[in-house]
Structure formats: C-alpha cells, structure tokens
Length: 158
Image 1 (spheres, rainbow, N blue to C red):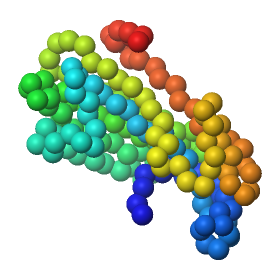
Image 2: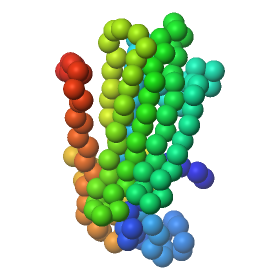
Image 3: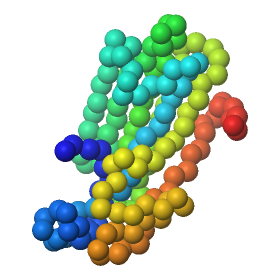
Image 4: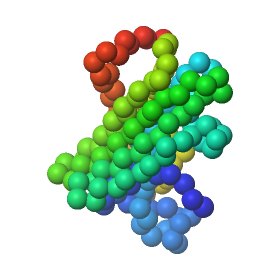
C-alpha cells in the first residue's frame, strides 16, 4: 500500500513480516507537515479542490529543493497565498528544512502548526519523546522539529 514516509539512506530494519525476515528500508514519520488554519478551517487533504487555485510545483534537482505554491480560499472567501519549500540538504544528510511563506489577502488571525506525521513510519518503534528504534537492527535515532517565525508575525501560545 502507498504511504507518505521519510527515508534516510542506510536506515534499515529486520521485519519478519516483510521480505521473509530480511532487512528492509525503515520509514520515519513525515517531517514536512505544516497545518495552516483560518477561522474554523484548516488546509489539508480534505480541502475541496475548488478552494485551491494557482497550484504549481517545481523540483530543483541540483539542490534538493521542492517548491509548491498555491492559493487557498476559505468557504467565507478569505484567500491566502502559500509557498512551501522543502529542502533535503545534500551537504548535511541529517538535516532537512521546510519553509512556509504565507501571504493573506485579508486581515485577521491565522494559525500555523508544524507536525510530525507518524502515519508514515514503518519498521520502527517511535517513542513519545521523538526518539525511535528500528525493528530487528535496533538502530537508535531521533526526529526533531523547531519552528521560527518571520518578521512581522505575532506569536500566540495556546
């Protein structure tokens, strides 16, 4: 079955349920998720296609960057331009980054929440503190996330 996962070169697990117990690549939680909320709506997979316009995705193979741009319009007509940039750093293989640029075409509050999506994890035991251990091979590691706000953004803790 298809799933979104994050993969690290050389990270394998021994899973008896897969490949007759041979080692298979392990998948980490997806680390690129950022939820954007406006009012009671959150942009996500359940957002109707008619609310998304100006969609464009570009892959820059030379530097490992994927840029996705779109305009999201809420049910009450508030349009927001979003550009996501996801970088898999080729010079530091243990580092990845996501940048969100958000331009609301309205005034008011919005929420931005970074998330690690565990649904994509395969062949690992994930602990609540973000550390993991691969099945069988017992490789230890961690997935961490930090967010920084840009200038002109007011942070509200909830």
